[in-house]
Image 1 (spheres, helix red, strand yellow):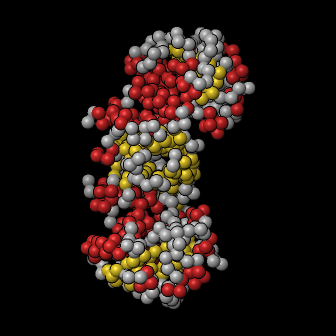
Image 2 (image 1 turned 90 degrees about the horizontal axis):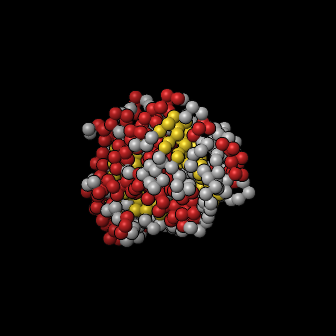
Image 3 (image 1 turned 90 degrees about the vertical axis):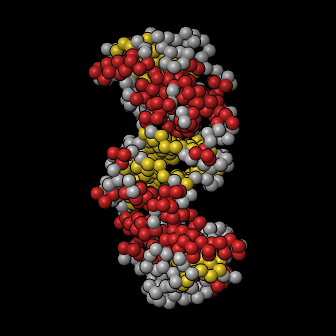
Length: 314
Length: 314
């Protein structure tokens, strides 16, 4: 374990952390930094992120995404049931074999995904992007804004759109109260897309919720929800309009069956864009597309960051 | 969740338990009862125990054995690295999705295996078995005796044999001190086999450590160690002498490649013997053989028992 990541496991034993600790201790800049490091390490070959594993248990599946961060000397996994319920992320010190932490609950996963989303927007949106459209009002939509608001592309305006007006109003009020961002609730999805600099689509919809032609030149769009050939929240036609299509894990994206997003060009790894070894946005008029799949091992990186914060607090 | 297993998770949140709690709270009769219930539930079709899953992480693999006990309303998994280190067992309440416990360390796994071994010996050895031979002096050998000593076939004499005399002497002293059993350290392996009623082989040896002809009629023998066609601690010839070959999981045994133990007859499930739907020992002169593979889901059952004891203690 590198000095940078010395979490002092052997001395104190593992810790059990839940949603309360995640909310209290995991701030967005920390989560984004941890995920950015993991994405770069993945590009450099230092992050092992094998395909997810599934165990059939009665009516649901227990899913495991394992990962190892060689540079940090950490490994672990996230486990979750397809039927819902508490997720569990476990982190080990690879060298000593000591378990460092078990993090349970519902908060860590979406915050990890939010941090990946912020890294993608910062890498792919125009540097002067200030208007953010958001389709979706669930936990994944929330953590995208949570992470983005803490960074250099903190939106100046947010236009949010959801299926249920009342829920969208509550979401908007929470964003204003907790993140201090001015939010407008859109009457139609198109308002959250057209004329925005950044569009985040975070729904469970199996059918496209927007039309490709609504997306203006120069926009960056991230898709969080369904992305299989049969079920997808964004229209396949958007792929043809995009100058570049990026994902946090081309291997996992391939395993999901994201053929509809591929177009003629292969998916670019976000880690490669961050490292400067693959082009991201090349001009201000380009449409850039990010397909978020949840690179395995990033949960472990974020959980390790949480453990560090926890130990700092004593 | 049945009343019998109401662990009150929602009220208190999950608990993190380690080796100290396992040693203090998990007594052998409890562990054996939990495993016996799980084996019977497996036979009745109520225990889902899919094949183990493996994620390659650098030089080691992270292995997951998941299981669901439908009757108890519990599911979970054990995770361990092939490079060693802390194991982790997690238990969920299936209905609510609440995580009940995370149990880490090195103690739970061998105690679960010991409990399976005791159930097998009680099901397959002669009812008047009093002499126990033990080859091996590691944690797995210890927990076999720990579980067996708490039941109806508590040995009157133990003859132990290991590669290193000094370690065997220490093992014997610990057995006498903690389990109150009289122990003799054998000079040769044969002494721990010939004339014994129960022989437990718990080594890491890839080559047979005993000869088939040493095993007397009427003996029950359990093998804990390597059992693949290429690596096995007992001689394949022993299969031909055995009247019945039993395993805790025929499916897992098949996946391991235990062809050398199969002989002409298929492996019998221990749960089927317990339920009375498959014959075990049919006469006092028979040699019975138990091949322990560690039925997935039994770790979850034992961990749930530990959680219950923990909550009882307040």
